[in-house]
Image (cartoon, rainbow, N blue to C red; front, side):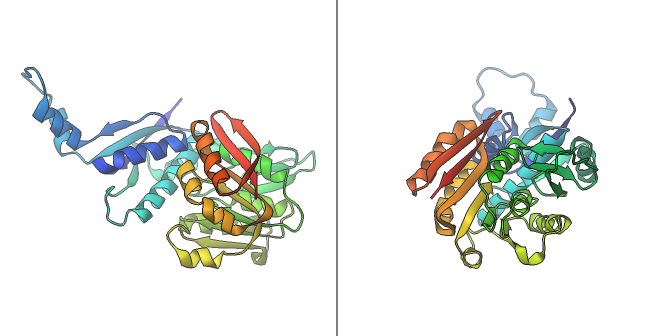
Length: 321
């Protein structure tokens, strides 16, 4: 297995929350370099130290950094894009710059190379009984008459191969009805909302905090021959932008949100605001350890759990209102 090193720059105050969010993405191991910790060690070290390596002394002035290692495959690519989305969200909320610059840098590989190299792992695949997902650069022999969803994730999370996305797609194709309206929160590549329209939804609204994601979702909708009038995209964060929250304010038959646990919990009242009575809410991006916490939060605002899907530590949950 080959790995790519990703260095995420923050501050001492940002380490705990950053590591918690990385764990929500599914990353379990970190290497932390923090000048404050090393200075404390130098000031309070016990015993006699005749020599401290000069390279270690450099830690006293280093920029605080959390390092993670991602596999060089489609899962690693999805994780990297999810990290970028998470950092964008943190930057947006960190008005006082408490958490530093919150930037990710790849070591020993150019980002453009990473973005292209992982494509070799993204091949057409089937989801559930109805869908087949294929990248725009691959051919697919549709022998069993499936609905083909063509996707190019570009710089946005969502090839469909990650368990969180696939679990959502499986739930979605079993509950969508012709003529439904769909809201996709944290749309990434647009895969869930585009799938919804292809499966019969009359229209879809896709929202993301990353401008590139919104652009990619719109492009992917056109690739799947969805007219612009049926597919609307919006850039911004409804948690901090009430104008945007009002723009998309209507009652939808289905809401999908494949994000992370903390953001899902923060958005619970918006799900209530936007979902029709008897509508369907599908959420994912939840590590299994936090499943009960998220379910409890949704039930606290009146949602009723209908279905839980778990795959290799990831969870998707379907609710009704």
